[in-house]
Length: 291
Figure 1 (cartoon, rainbow, N blue to C red):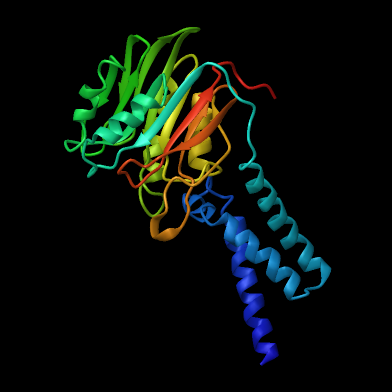
Figure 2 (figure 1 turned 180 degrees about the horizontal axis):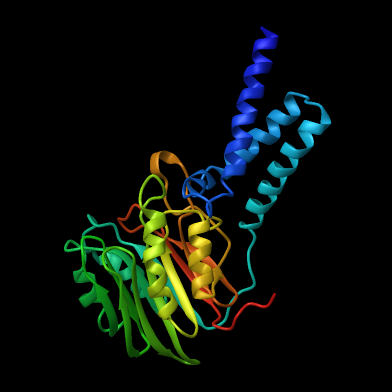
C-alpha cells in the first residue's frame, strides 16, 4: 500500500511539474497561458510533494528550483509599488446585465478618477455614459454586444480607435503634461477559446498609439501570461501593482483586471456596484519606468 501511494504521489508530482513548466510556454502554444492560470497551485503542489516524497537530490533540486522560482515571482506581484504622480484611472467591467443605478453613478463620481475605461457597456447600462457627461464630457464609445467606452475629464485630441468586435476602445486625450492615450481592453477567455487570436488581431491597433499609453482592462488572464506581456510590450507599459483578485468564479480568486502604465503607480480595488467584477483604480505616472 505504501509503495502504491508513493507511485501515485510520484505520478501526481510529475504531472504537476509538467503543467508548471508548460505554463511558461504561452509563446509556443496558447495552452501554455491557460496553464499559467494554475501557476500558484501547481508550484505549491510541486514544492510540497518534492519534500514529502524524499526523492534523490538529483530529482528534487530541479523540481524544487522551478517551484521556488515560481512562488517567489508570484509573491513579488503582491508587493506595493512606488506611488505614481499625475493621472488617476479607474477600470471597470460593468457586466452586461447590470442596470444603471444611483450607486454606480455615485461610485464613479466619488472615485476622483481623471479617466475611466469601461467594459461590457450594453443597452441595460449605456445610459450611464450620458449621466456622467457633466463630469466626463469627453467620451469615446465603441458599441456592440460587449461594448467598451473611455471617459475623460481631459479634452480629446480627436484620435480614437475601435477594434472590430470585442477588443479595444482607445482615445487620445490632452492631459496636463501633453497628449496620451487611454485604452480599454476586454479579452476573450484563453485557450481553448480565442484569446490568442484576438491578441494577434489587436496588435495593429496597439501599434498605432504613439506616445504614452495607459491601459485599463478585463484581460481574462493573469498578468504573467504571454498574451498580456505582448500587450504590455506593444504599448510600452507595465502592470501597476500590487496584484489582487477582481472576480471569484466558483469562489476561485482570479486577478484578471488591472492597469498597465508607462511609469510607476499604485493600484487599489474598488467595489463591485452590481457587477461580477471589482473595479480597479490606480494613480500612475506617464514617464517611463527606469530599469
